[in-house]
Amino acid sequence: MLAPNAFVQSDFLGKLIYLSLVTLSMTTWALFFYKLWLSKKVESFAAQCEHHFKQNKRSPLNLDLQNRNYQTGVANPFLSLYQLMQEGAMSLLKKNKELRAHDSSRSTFLSSTDIEQLTSQVEMKIYAEKKFYEKYLFVFSTIFSLAPLLGLLGTVWGISVTFNQLPKAGNALSNDAVLSGLSMALGTTVFGIVVAIPALIFYNYFRSRAEGYAVRMNQFSSDLLHSVEIQYRAVDV
Image (cartoon, rainbow, N blue to C red; front, side, top):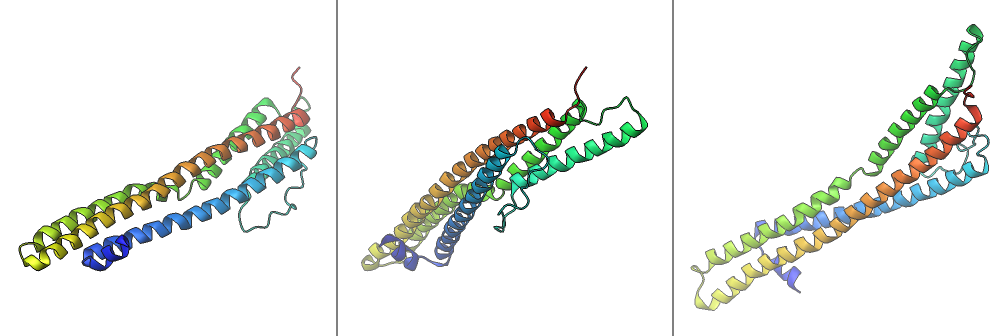
């Protein structure tokens, strides 16, 4: 086979390039399986939280999401989002109740400003959760850019070694010297491309998943805030 022979016939730098490409390939696939596992967990979290909310949307601040079966070793972003909204709304309701004790003209419900404040907090939380989901995606883009360059380096080095060995080799060895250098040159090029292609596919795939994840978070938070607004917002007179 081309790859094993090319590796064996390579010099120290050639072998180092091959081993670097192997390391990049292993990193790509390890990160892919981790992100795929994380994606499935997030999908499960989203489905469970959305289902439970739809069943109890008339009591948006009393959802029992904390006791759901989410103990999977991964933080539940939908639960974190709900807790932020719940704590913020409860804090504002408590503040308004305390102010009502000193000023009877004030409402104990949530004002338009309170709703806007909650919305702003939720949007920041969604942005943070999306960034967490996109964590390590730069590794895919780095490997996609780096692997072909390493392959090209191996190509240039292999051709350089070939031309350097030709004057030193006799007629009987000239063909072996040429084939050895070209084998390394072509081998690293092919290997670099093979490593880069999955990295590009995985990067685009998980970027798309991150965008879809953010849309789903926005929809979930929008439904939550709408339900809270219906139940607890002060009536404008």
